[in-house]
Length: 222
Image 1 (cartoon, rainbow, N blue to C red):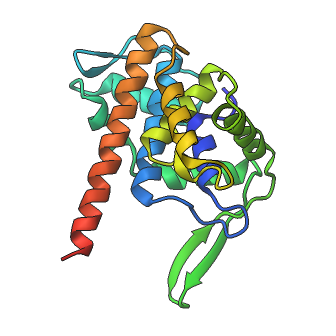
Image 2: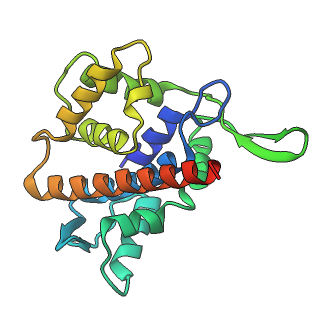
């Protein structure tokens, strides 16, 4: 496995110059967790049976973080729904995947302080080749209407679930992009079993993002 869906997702939402995230925290965090589950679904390691995530092949896929998620699911004392796994996996992922991008030379770590007090980490771009290639694939599919390969289609479906599609290409028609993303997400780009798992995972991501957004709006209004 080369660049994973969570890595591509993080590269897309990181501002190349400022190194900050151009997306809401819940959307990115749940999207990273969903990306891990999608990788396992695409590799035919997991399926959704009776609305629960089931391991159908426990063999590692060759990526340490994805394999760690697979092991957690395989060794869980009970089967859980996709939304439960999205919640269980999401918390530590942003820092881990940020560090992965640093180690691969795609971004660099800058430690800063807001107001001279609060420490923050920023990740400006160093080598944008992978991000450029990913964005090129997405533009080809979402803006130019090209047929997607399965991994690009999976990334589109994940971005749609995390409500990130509308900000991808500010120079293009947002309504048209949203319609195309829906079309791709619901297309016949994967086998029936994989598609069922992908749809379940993406529904879980969308639900988690919506719930977190609503909770944030409620707390800010009180």
